[in-house]
Amino acid sequence: MDGIWGRACAELEQSVGPNNYNHWIKPLRLTSIEDGAARLASPTRFISDWVNRHFAKEIVSVLNRAGAEVERLRFEIGAPAARLREDAPAEAAPADDAPAAAPARTERAAPATTRAPRAELGAPLDPRYTFSNFVVGKPNELAHAAARRVGEGGPVGFNPLFLYGGVGLGKTHLMHAIAHDFQARHPVAQVLYLSAEQFMYRFVQALRESTIMDFKGMFRNVNMLMVDDVQFIAGKDSTQEEFFHTFNALVDQGKQIVISADRAPAEIKGLEERIKSRLSCGLIVDLHPTTYELRLGILQSKTDSFRAQQPDVEIGAGVLEFLAHRISTNVRVLEGALQRLFAHASLLRREITLELAQECLADILRTNDRKVSIDDIQRKVAEHYNIRLADLIGPKRARNVARPRQIAMYLAKQMTSRSLPEIGRRFGGRDHTTIMHGVRKIDELMVEDTSLAEDVAVLKRLLEA
Image (cartoon, rainbow, N blue to C red; front, side, top):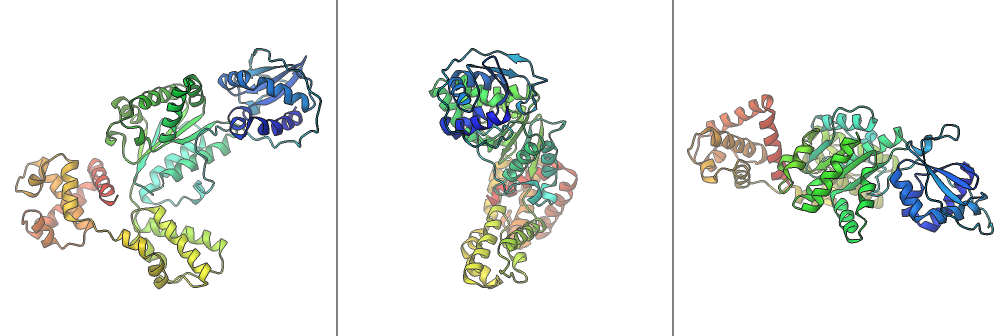
């Protein structure tokens, strides 16, 4: 059976096109041919119904050219196709007969390599993004541990997994790594990874083409749904409605959902409260801004990888430390800078020195030298806590004003090069000892108050964006 189906698949991929083949034909497996009926194992009824309506005649014709004598198709539903055996069939679901005259046999195609079915309706997975090359540090260790647990595919205890953080902190890397790991451990599973924008586009397309039931079937018959940048659907009412029902349907079936965004669910403006509530029912994990140590570890890992490809390139002392210190907000920019240095050094046959780094990366270094001002910090803190800027700077001592003021002082000390007396002057002429007290107080509270620590991390991210 595998030989016949392999030859048929090779021809079907050409005749129906790679997209249709990957979506609908590849999940099937030929299990037997009896009395002119070809039995095909299908992981879901939706796939078998779609194939029967749209590709039955083509499959019958191709099977005949592959050496079988077939007049109609029947489908077996209820178990992963690759696990079905002729001696232990799953519950059969007879399909309508799809007769077709057997044409004259032609030269047989070479057997196709059969692979386990995968949902390829969304974005392709990047083979570079795996757990093996994800550098773990304190800012991302919880996110990494949660992602590994989901990738294993066993009982998880939380659904969905919600990853959030600023640009270039590793959200997409972890999502791709989950998908790779899950598919490696469960080859017949259907994993669908796509952006929220792609979800919306497919939904609008289904509405326009009156294929909304097909859309629902596509998204509700996967083993794992992964949606990147979910904040994109905020304010889009119809898309949110469909996302809400898709989310509920998958959770009710025990299917795993992984979501990413640039902020926590409660902070996404324009997102319906019921969706925020559903997203908050699982595990919410923040990928914190990288530390110097983590950035240096990432650079060292990438350097080893680049050296394997370009062994003749030498890198001088202090270069990686310089990059880890100067490029602090975005890991993608950091990795891109190192890649540019290796390419530059390889083409010019030069050693990577501090001078070369400063010369080659002048534009990146200038961008990352953009300073956050005390005015920026004060405005952002006042906006975040919904208080007046005049109150933040003024003499009010009410707790709802005093704590945000101390946070603003702390951020001013951490994110600017201004002296304590100068910061004091910008906060209504306060003495530098008042600023020191505020900074120390926030340092102490962040250890024991996770909510406050989260607020500080969010504000840092917003100011660095």
